Length: 151
View 1 (cartoon, helix red, strand yellow):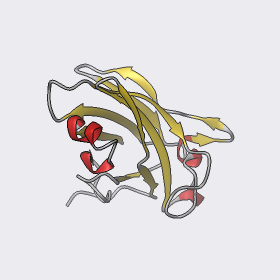
View 2 (cartoon, rainbow, N blue to C red; view 1 turned 60 degrees about the horizontal axis):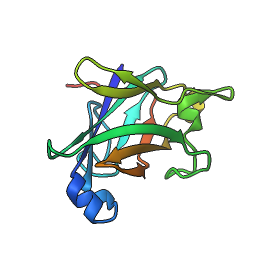
View 3 (spheres, one colour; view 1 turned 135 degrees about the vertical axis):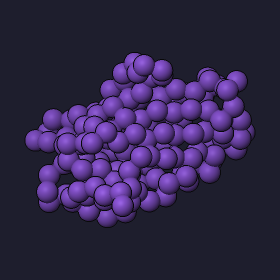
View 4 (tube, rainbow, N blue to C red; view 1 turned 60 degrees about the vertical axis):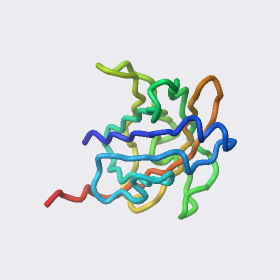
């Protein structure tokens, strides 16, 4: 499945607040994800999913772009697991990479988790540049056995 995650940032308020996460709003296209519309989205993903991230500013006059991803190597998720299991297998990381989409740039990776990781949260860090300032933000992926079906 293609999982699309969008970060919407109120850049002016985010910068003036010193980087307060309340000015970041995250949404995805996956049923069952938690925290949608807020700043702590946990997107439900399944091993093999292709995940794409993009970022937009609320004001069209603000400049914003993702600059990179880091897998947090220490346990930071709500259940004490690091994200390396979500993006890697057998020591090989599948860190998100930048791609030029048809209308805008996005970053993508595929989930490389194993069955024993089902129902675990994995934290990752996304770096972005907003009006010339660089920030990092660290939401979650939740690896699940299968996607919830739309009724």
